Amino acid sequence: MISAVTKARNTIAEAMREASADLEEIRGQIDALHRERRQVERQSDDFETIAARIGGVIAEARRESLISQNMLTSVSATASTFDALFSNLMQRRPFFLLAHLAPDALRESLLADVERKGGISPKQRAAALETIETKLLTAEIAEEVAIREMEDATGSYIARRAKADPAILLAPDAELSPPPD
Image (cartoon, rainbow, N blue to C red; front, side):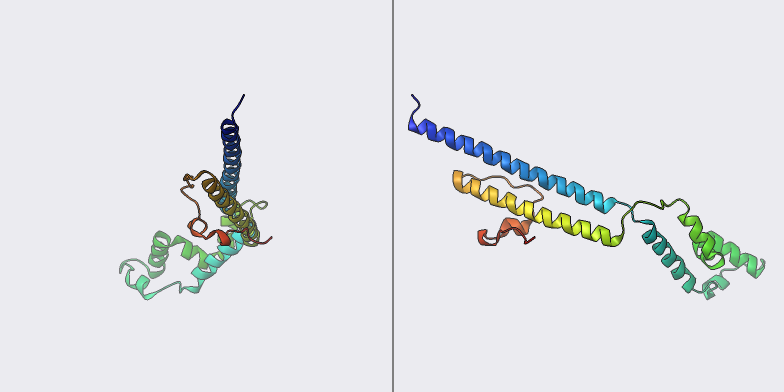
């Protein structure tokens, strides 16, 4: 016959196995959310965002004067002024020169290889990241609560993840509640 002490040990051991499995499941969710966040962060911008950025860079280049005092003083005395300036600009600042001479052609050339479909807008990226961060916070709080409960039940230390949020680790028990939905 199994003694009461053995039954209690077995019950405790089974509870710890279940709690450890639950903790590993939470940690798996956290890892998956980190992967999802990296995927959203790495996703390419949509065509409209890329086109606007390129247009902005070209417009910025066009705001600068095409010929500056610096360029005039660097021109060789033996070359014609136009040829020397053109050559100087083509060697040192081809994008700048093309932005002034053919901004539309430069824009179209830069956008020629950009995917017209797919990508993500800045608003979509921000919304997706906000959703992921909320889920991540909820999962990390659940992880810490589970660890603290296991530590209280066993009296032994449970290792935290190296990348656990320090604010959650240091929070008093009363402050560990999931964010509102």
